[in-house]
Amino acid sequence: MDSNEVAAHWESNAETWTIYSRAGYDRYRDAVNTPAFLSLLPPVAGLNGLDLGCGEGTNTRAVARLGAHMTGLDVAPTFIRYARETEQQDPLGIIYVLGDGQSMDFPDASFDFVTAFMSIMDMPDQRAALEGAHRVLRPGGFLQFSILHPCFVPPTRRNIRDESGAPVAVEIADYFDETDGYVERWMFSQIPAPERDALTPFSVPRFHRTLTSWVSMVVGAGLTIEAFGEPTASPEVALAEPVVADTRVAPIFLHIRARKVAT
Image 1 (tube, rainbow, N blue to C red):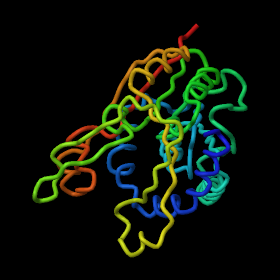
Image 2 (spheres, rainbow, N blue to C red):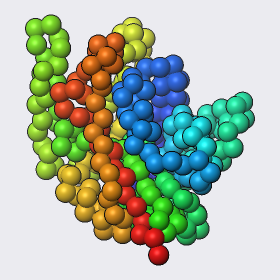
Image 3 (cartoon, helix red, strand yellow):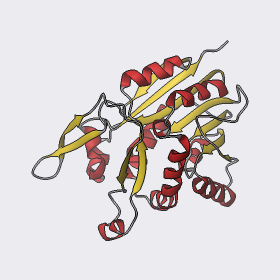
Image 4 (spheres, rainbow, N blue to C red):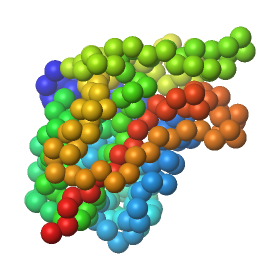
């Protein structure tokens, strides 16, 4: 699957994704993944940052509220339209650019840091995206990105639940199957069933890579890994939001921070 096909899938998702994620139905993002990502993020106040694969801009805005001067890049025009509309309504100084994260049109050493919330994993040429992030970083700058955890969310994954429906284990398979554009179709599970059944499911291309491949690509891009994160819901969050309780059995997300050597 090439970049144009991937862009078409995400453009087809963008309208529904924006409406329902902004309505609070992306509970894994809002309750677990984004808070943990921001907690891992070094201080960014006053720095110039790029959000790679920014989507409709919710996470870009979260980083901007920490004091960073942000640029958001995404391949889907509808995502960029929504992001720009929100910026016009509530300005945070964010510039949104339509473009491909695998072939970024920014000068070398343009940014102090790059973030990528659950986006690089959806690019067919992840190596090019990582090398591009290295190129646009200033010496000493960092890339922090989140992906589905390659060890615990391979192409085949199933929650195992007890009699009460509580998750107690995870069954996984096909870890070494480095897929090239297998399309998953799903919808936010918390949307009420009658409404969800009337929606066209998201079509999300998967490009699974093993943990070894991810580490090799990051290091091969010239970056030095300095932090990992495996977010899990606290007992209180899992009790309040049972949908994310499976993150206490095994991690669903992996966060990686890597730095460009200062010269």
